[in-house]
Image 1 (cartoon, rainbow, N blue to C red):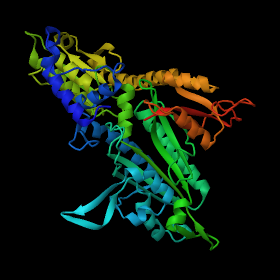
Image 2: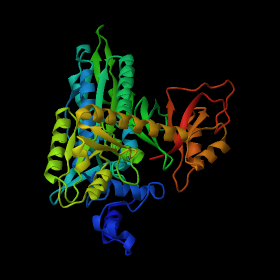
Image 3: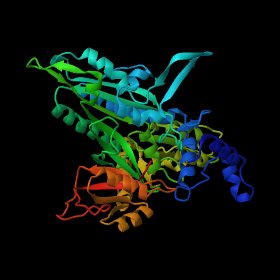
Length: 514
């Protein structure tokens, strides 16, 4: 993936344009992409997120400016998720960004998992700090000393807190906007219960909310499942996740995680309570999070060679209205019709705007709003004005429909629902076409070379997974287990593990991943 410096250079080259008359229009407008999604996915992605006004590159590598077009998508997901967790009696809070080294290092497995990515503050002005301070990579060790202070008896449970915040993980490999950045936004929930049963129940409730974010809002199919012991959250009991897949690159991507931490952190941080019998017990804990990575997955799955394609449920702007006046047309009448259309749609709760800029041609505007991924374009020209209609053009498939202004709201609402559903259906069709069921190592290697999402029988042994990683290491990165799906196909008796030949105990998804 192109880094910040390379990208800026690419941008300057593109503005300079190439010679030759065929390039004239593109050079003049500054629109259009230099790379296609199929031929050079990495450069295409870097270009789409900038030209679609989602991000701007920053002067610190691996950090990005999230522009309003991206933040509005984040806010739409936040509105849904925040309301849902409040129904579950989760309360929002905010803990500091800084962590003392003593607290950070208290849970050994946990810090070992994050150690390479922890950023440290070592100076104040010109003076060295006596004790360096870490910047949170996640907040278990920030929050749990206070859980032990606040939880005394069974009446203090359950304790359910969430914070919307930023975290810093000083990544060094291939920083990619939204997908792998040194600072990102997320929510992180941290809950404590009296019993394991309560904790187990919540893990799955939250995972279902994450599925809904991806499938109902972002129109991306995901698989719910459990992570292997090797891939689970450092220091946790078990990890569940929703996993997406990017057909163009043949890579899985962890969409969001819901962890049961068990009693490990409770033991380290002495989070004890007196139960109803007056006995001392340790709490059971969960932590769960999803981040701005969701936006990157959406761009990768739905984007095309014209730019972004936004699902209506998360788009800041669902409908763009564009006037198409000809030389002798009633320009004012057309502009008035555009304004009236926006007013009618807005009153009905549909996010609509008109592009009345006179210094750009209608064609330029079409390309501009296609690049930004607005789900539906409405064009109004002299013929539309005369026939009391508008022309609607879908971003997802380019389909054009003339709509009577009498039925404007119903028709537009219906079209937005169809776009949302179609985006999901197409993405699922493409994802499903990539799934390959294998039984042997040779079939596995062949499928991996074909960029497949591999479903294979596995013996569930950590050493075997380490061996798979070692044997598939290469320029493209090693293969690993993505998740063991909750919905398990039948495993016939006597089925052998694809990698070890030992008796298989489950079906697991494998592949390369982000």
